[in-house]
Each structure stands twice: as C-alpha cells, then as structure tokens.
Length: 359
Image (cartoon, rainbow, N blue to C red; front, top):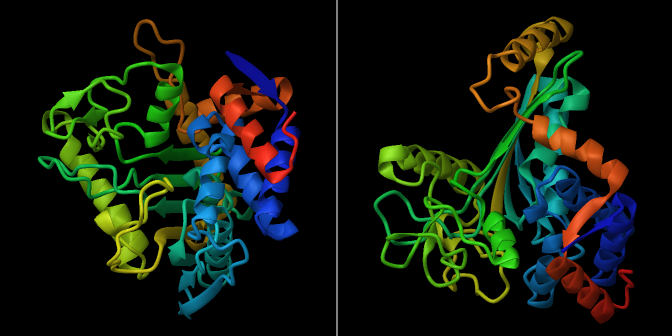
C-alpha cells in the first residue's frame, strides 16, 4: 500500500527530527534537502526511509550532531576535509563546495574526505557543480556488504559514482550509480514488499547466487556490477575498489572491511585503519578546457543524437543518464512522494519517540 506525501511535508518533518537530535537549523536544513531529494528523484532507498537509521547511529554515539567540519590539508586545487563524525548529509555538501571554490580559482578542485558518515545520494553532490558551469564528480565508500569477484568475504561497499555534466538547452547529463549490480537499499525495498531479488544481485554465505532478498542479512553478500565473472563482475569490483581508494586510502578514512557500517546493529571494527567513512569530490570548470557555451552547445548535440537513437523493439525511446530521475521529480513535485506503509509506520514511530508529529 502506498500513500503520497508532499515534498514540503517530508522536508519539514526531516528538519524537525534532525533538530531534535541536536543539529543546528542550518545543518538540519541542508541534510533534509539532500535526503528528500532522493525521494523526489525516485531513489527511494536513500530518502526518508533512512532517516531513522541516522537517528539510531546518533543514539549509538556514532554521529556527531554538532561537528566542526574543517579543511586539514590543502593546495590550490586539492584539499582534505575532516567531517568530525558529522552527518555525511552535511559533510558532503561542505566538501563539494570546497571543490567548487578550488575550481573557480584553479580550474579544477579535488577534495577527499575522512571522518564522515553515509552521505545520501551521490548525484545530489555532483549536481551542485552544474549551476557554476562545472562538471561535478561524487564518490563515496560504504558499509562492507560486497564480495570481490571470486570471494565469499564482504570487503567493499556499494561505492557509488556520480558525474553531472551541464548542457545548454538540453537537461544535464547526470549519471548516478552503485558499483554493485544493485544498491543495498534496493534489497530493503524488496524486503518491505516481501519480494525476491533478481538472480545476480546477491550470493549466500557459501558464495552461491541466491534470490533471497534477505541474503545479506543472513551472512551473504551483494555482488559487484555484472553479478559474476562471465558478465563483468571483475569490472564492477575494479570500479568499487577505485572508489574505495579515492575516498578513503587517499583521505585517511577507513577502507575495505574497516568501513563503519550504516546499520546500528553492527558495530564498527574495533581496530580501525582510519577515521570514519570517506568521500571524494571533483569540480571541473568547463571553461578551463574550452568556452562554456561552446561546450554546452556540443553537449546538446551529443544528448540529442543519443536520445534519437533507434530503440530496440518494445522500447519507446533511448534514455540519457538522469532522464528517469528528472521526469519522476517533476511528477512527484506535483503529485507527491509515495511511501510504503512500513516506511510510514517507521517515520510515525520515530516522530512519536522524538516528539514530532508525522501526520
């Protein structure tokens, strides 16, 4: 069963909840904007359904609601940001803004982050660059729920990659994807609906492919992009590894199996190799390469040509990365954001616990 809620309602509820755990008005607003943007764009696995998860981490003392986020090392075009254990939903926009400011002065800006937490959808942060005629890049490592190709061990996260590229008359190109066949949040949605997972998403504790949507909870693992070696999982494994290294080995955050898990019922490794969770951001000023209007005009040509590609039988059209999310956002701003009944119940209980009405 689904029920629709307005963007404004979910955003304000999220702000009120985050203020209850000690976030400032400014930080609560930034975090709510990031979180509810996921629901708007149809990435329901990373929206308000995760709000109670952040609160549980705060209750466990694993999120600092009043962080002192700061740059700890920098050059004209690079920086390392220490998130001070804050919400990744707040740390990441701060770090991406640092990258943008670096790019304004140096042409490009590159920022690696340590001591952070889950930062919501990667695309939000990459898209911050668009209004500045910049290309944005956003990466993060994540809870170790993924087995490398040929392994039974969980050593990597879903480790998403997002790249946002401006155009002129056409909407921007926005790629936002996990480096696994499916993100863990997609499994959570299947669990709420009591549905099985497609083959190639998960393996059981023995490394055998399974369709059990609870397979990871039972000790199994998510699979790298491609599912198995014959379908390219070694490529997904490599992409996830690159994200892990850029996000954490470069910054001083935890990497691989030492990344602190998002779920509060699992404790972080008692012998960490770094500080918190890591991200990596890039901002590239288009006019550092060629005039921005000229580039964006050619992006229009690129997008138009690919959009007009002849579709295979049974498909209406060829999509450009970012099309489904943009189209869904327009619908949800008008008609509301649908939430499953288990999510509504979870948010209602969360509100009751913290003295904020969800209705």
